Image 1 (cartoon, rainbow, N blue to C red):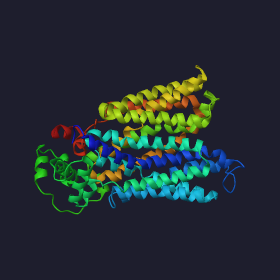
Image 2: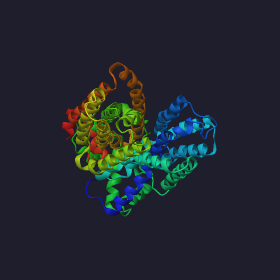
Image 3: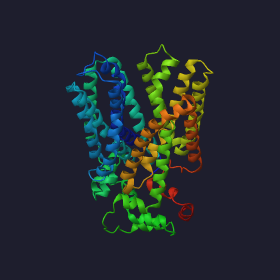
Image 4: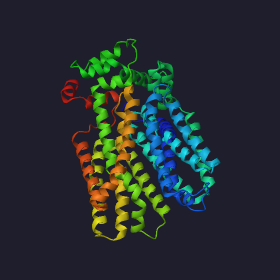
Length: 484
């Protein structure tokens, strides 16, 4: 449903979104923590049983990715079985266990295990985006689902700040307490109405919609929303999309009661659904392109680049400023994504990111500008990239799929992210050896321009549309013309 959102509904949905997106903030804690404990762990002043070797420290920093890759497929298994809320709580537990273990041990192996185990929680990002999209009104869905990215940067920033101000043990206690708080906040929320309808709990679904929309349970708005969810869940809806019937079939679909039928497995529905396969291709392409634009590499190499550009600045301060840069861009994106749309934001920021990659590459290769210009380009690229190209794939993941395949497709999208992160880091050093550091960023600029071209020519605009309105956009042109 589009239109103006009630102030009270906006407040409730925003607070609920903050509580759900908190999970990615906990992920930010995990990713930031090794960077400011490096000196503590690798010197004779270590708080562990022995100093960590550079190899062990490298492994420590990568274990979260391995845990995330293992944990992401679990999302598809639990999200449609125990619901969005309990699944979100389940994926919050690894963080609680992680910080509890680390705060009580000096064993290197246990610390390694704890960080890897926390990665399972990082795999729960798919649940956060699905949960938020299903409680949000269509007109503000983009802004709210993009908050999962903002929350990650808030987690990075807060962890960096804590690491610079508190003692080692106190940082652990704060992270533990904030992980427990996440689970407590979720207890205050209602389950997703989509999941409740899937389970045949229409009364509870009406109460959930009324809670998030701040209207009466018997109101017309609740009735309309329940009918819309039922239509999205009706297998005949996909058949109607794939047929050449009159568009009025939608009206008849709503008027006829849905026959009781055995629920089809998500993967079987995906294989038969033309719109779902089209949407999945678009999401995976955008997610893969997003990673190959080079942001993960820039994060890895930011510290040595900053040391060269601004040698008088403390590395922790550089990290804090970079996190502030990321967060500022993500917050601006949340305000503009429902105004300018996903397509235009992805196109413009991809092209602009390509431009800044060329600037950075030429500066690293030829040193044609002062050293401080390197820092400026890094900050400018990071801001522009996170203004759109970094966020849009996650927003699309949350909104373009029908409920039957939302869990499995969101998990596939996150798996794509983890795999492409790994691939990018694997190919980066060989590229540097063959081309040099500067020209490697030219390669990333080409990827940026490919992403911008794809989004401009082929990515549908989904701003303000519900899932059932989005499906025809991913059908073949002939079918879209028939339906429209």
